[in-house]
Image 1 (tube, rainbow, N blue to C red):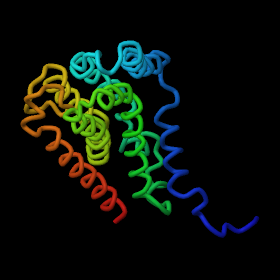
Image 2 (tube, helix red, strand yellow):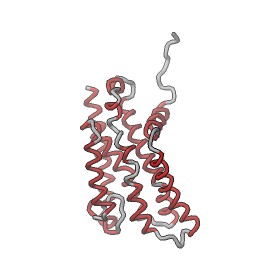
Image 3 (cartoon, rainbow, N blue to C red):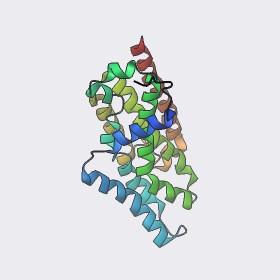
Image 4 (cartoon, rainbow, N blue to C red):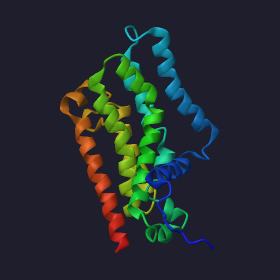
Length: 216
């Protein structure tokens, strides 16, 4: 057999693409349809109404909260997929076990940005810059929490229960202290999205720490 001279072919980009394909494939048809609607409705409304006339509030308080929960079935796999498929020993013995976890996390962020891209387009077109930090927090928190909770608990349950609780109390019902997507003016003024951005960084660090400990 021809000897393998390098294992770097494709690099991190190839790993990220592979994780993104794993995240997106095999979902129910209605999930893809819902994602398309979440992107299309704000964009079509923006185009037909115009940036000067579109109302940001329905997008901010209704569309974005739904977009912040829609990829839940994708995020749930982050940090636990190798365990579920019984390939964790192979991942840990691979050349880039930490990069695999980072790629998994980034794939979750890419999905979040994709589903929320219609909301982002409205924010940018209308100059609603105050809500942009909430968007950043919204796309970071779930993948980060999933990565940490999945890595440490090796189950999807901890992430699903904790994130659903945060989402229900905060973005859905508008409680400012846990409104991590900035759906209310009060949460933005309190700096809540910024707090959750910092928390997301800590959670990613916790996930990487767990993977490092697993490496021995």
